[in-house]
Every structure is written in structure tokens, then in C-alpha cells.
Length: 170
Image 1 (tube, helix red, strand yellow):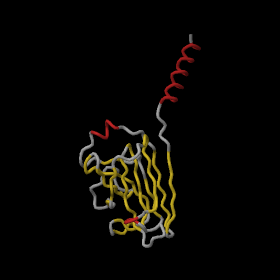
Image 2 (cartoon, rainbow, N blue to C red):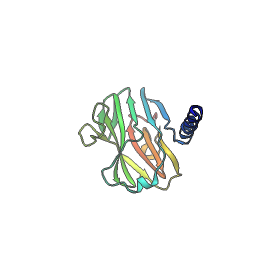
Image 3 (tube, rainbow, N blue to C red):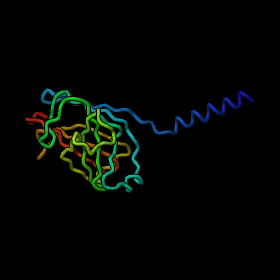
Image 4 (cartoon, rainbow, N blue to C red):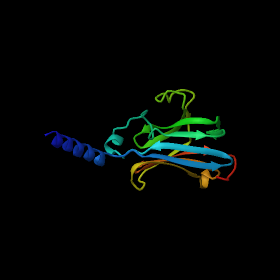
């Protein structure tokens, strides 16, 4: 009887591990103009039901994303010191967002502080569907040439925030 119980517990435990969604830790490292950008986050599955209930002011943790800056950068003409920042997306509506950098030392939920820096952000709808949260840092193009773009893709939305660089090496 003990063996049967142990076997059943083992099988149910193994089944729950196999069927649960793994949250994968992802890291993106980029260097531009001598500045190192290190982005880390956990993937989360897309949940369209939750997204449809989002109201103005909701702050998404972006997979507990953090961005390490080795030197200062400019965001919306404001100089940001080197250090670690939390990446957050604040809802203007359920389909328009503002990306923010919040100093890591600050409370996770305190995005209203003057320490939180809103990025110039563009939200794109009807993108190819991403079944999991995906963050990346890429080179800008067109109007954003000479800058880096922090992109957050979730479902059929992509949100891009502009990280300022002083020359078009990015």
C-alpha cells in the first residue's frame, strides 16, 4: 500500500511539473557607444482575458524585468544615472502603454514617484501574436535612428520605448 501511494504521488507530481508553464529567465545584453545595457526578465504566458480587463493606471511588471545601465543615458531629455532599474509598462488604456524605468531601490509598486522616468513610447496593435512575453533591445530606425529601442511584445501588442544615445552608432 505504501508503494502504491508513493507511486501515485510521484506520478501526480511529475504530471504537474510537465503540464505547468515554465517561467524562463531571459537575458539580453547590448553595448552601444561604450554603454552596456543588460536586460533580464521572466517569460509569462499571454492572457487575453486579463488584458481585456486592464484599466488606466494599471502597472504591468513586464516579467519582473530589470535593466542595468553601465553609464548614464538620456530618456525624454532627462539624464538617467548608471545603475539597475525596473522596467514597467503603465496602461493609458488596455491598448496604449507607457514604458517606465523605476530605480531598483524604489518600491516595486511606486511608479508615481518623481524617481520613475517615463520613456517616449509607441504602442503598436495587430502585431504577429506572441504567446509569451518577450522583451528586447534593438537599434532604432527612421525617426528613432541613433537611439536604442526597448521593446515589449505581449499578445498582438508591441510597445517600444526610446533610450537616447548621442550619435547614430546604435
